[in-house]
Length: 114
Length: 115
Image (cartoon, rainbow over all chains, first blue to last red; front, side, top):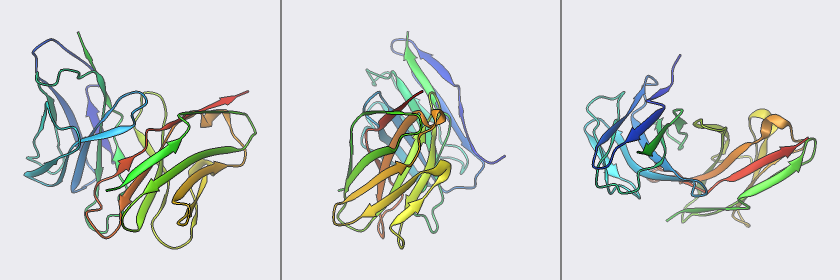
């Protein structure tokens, strides 16, 4: 089945630690996105990538980093510089050609601080 | 810049009653508009979208929405609520004709359905 796989489902971070959230898609989509979701705040864009080896900052990129070495993979690293990392993180993807903005989402990773 | 306002962070209805979730948008160019649904601890699923053409669009699970340019609105309705409709709903906008890869989301409306 085609889709977006996020792992792990739950993740715990210790003080000063970097953690990496995985996002893999087999939809052959060009564009991929990372969002952060906090209660009552909707989804806020962290980073997005339209093609391999290129990515742009979203609205809340500070304390996060990404890479896009393969079309199907877009991992997100939450660095120790992100002082309030507890949130639900969602990865999404969309096609580039003929795109009207439809994004398809993974099931999310819930990150908590120990 | 584009923005989305969802009126009411929490809406509660009885089973069988009309569901109305409100969404107003701001966009400098003709918008593409979307409603997504999120069940607890899951990702978002597309309910319906408006791009061009007919202003009344139908989606999955009996939901529909009407694009009203004069009111800059895209309210979501369902004639009769079902218990399984309980979820959080997000309205989103992207700008047509430009860099239409980015979506701007509203803050969401939590729908509760009472038996």
